[in-house]
Amino acid sequence: MLSIIIPANNLIKSINPRFFYKKRFCLDDTIQSIVQSISIPYELIIVVNDCNNNELVDYVKTSPYVTKYSINSSNAGVARSWNIGAHLAEGKHLCFCNDDVEFTNNIVFEQLVQLLNADDKIGEIGPAGGKWHLDKSGDRTGLTKIEEADEISGFFFIIPAVIYHETGGFDNYYTPAGCEEIDMSFKIRSLGYKCIVVPNTGIIHHGNHGISSKRSIVKYFNQEVDTHELDKRNKAYFINKWYKKS
Image (cartoon, rainbow, N blue to C red; front, side, top):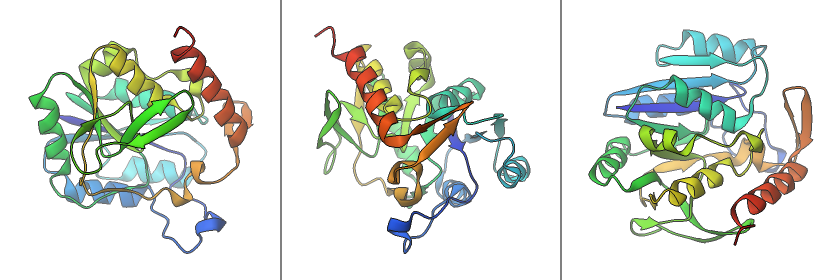
């Protein structure tokens, strides 16, 4: 029924000095949290972005909870990793999840899937999202009730598989990361579907030690990029793609 897709670059995240006092929530924590909270049939797909990371590769290959995996020779980026996972998936719905997300509600997956099954005009659903204009997010929506949004936050969201394939998948231009999830929400809405935020899901994003929480150099394929420059590049592409005609 549900394919859960998680890209992973490391088994244990490096400490962000700004948040040294906060727990590092990592891949195994997320997987254990999923296993303990999910109550519907599912498959778990892990996309590893470094074949030389032996600790991560061994974990994924031996975990009893990992249904399928793909091991890339180098960092393929978020968009490509999500696309790889989606093409391995067999579920009716595709759940895209970061490797630092915690689930505290033991029926949240069931609730979100039920909402999707009840309304074929919902193209995307998640616990956080809001308005968006040009290169900036606007007011958050769905804080106290179920509401539509321009974009769903990228740490966790679910898309019906048929709608994912209708969009053509995530735009690989955004490699290695940044704006690909916003771009997908815009694609989904451009096809006439709704992006829905559901409050009080008990889904927690522990993003304090993730790549987006600090300025750094990201290596991907045979290149590297500063995260601040990457943000500028991807937002410029996004604006040109979605606002130039208007």
